[in-house]
Length: 217
Image (cartoon, rainbow, N blue to C red; front, side):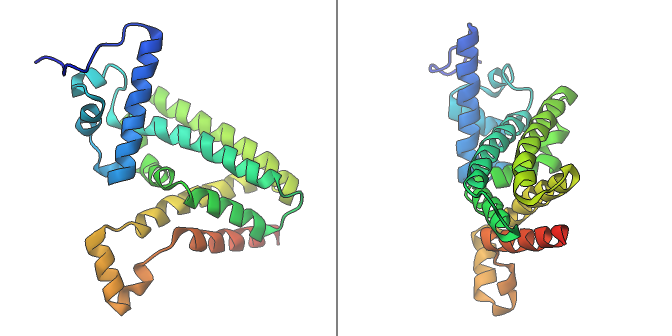
């Protein structure tokens, strides 16, 4: 079986990096359009213009591709969150909760990835890939922690608890907020099921405000 005409195997380091970037961008685009769990390795390969066997020269599994995107998402979200927190010289729990909720809700693909990472993305990759991913998250949590210490005097464990709660709830709430057209129609047409219609940002803000208020108390 021959490769599509558009495919040329990357020979140099720069070409390999460009191909990896194209694969990640294709996966991100498909994930945004369909939802992460509905995107297959074959879908990503077709989007890039190569066969699945050729794509496996760059990433060991579908899960590794999306785990890489999750790590990128952590870096990007952490930067946005810390920028937001730095604009507030003093803050109360509601201010910090709002910063977390708005920056997370603005990143639906990242929220989807946050839900998928512990369920399956970390389970079909090498231990080295998992270690690299965990080290990225730990680094970003430490950076966030410095801002939380300045604003609220949170210690390392309190920071870890807050970030874990925020990202875990963001992933879960995003899944609840995107049930698919058939279920959404059911939830919106039956008044008894109205509670199943979830808005991520306001609910996350309420949860994190309560969490931080209790932590400080």
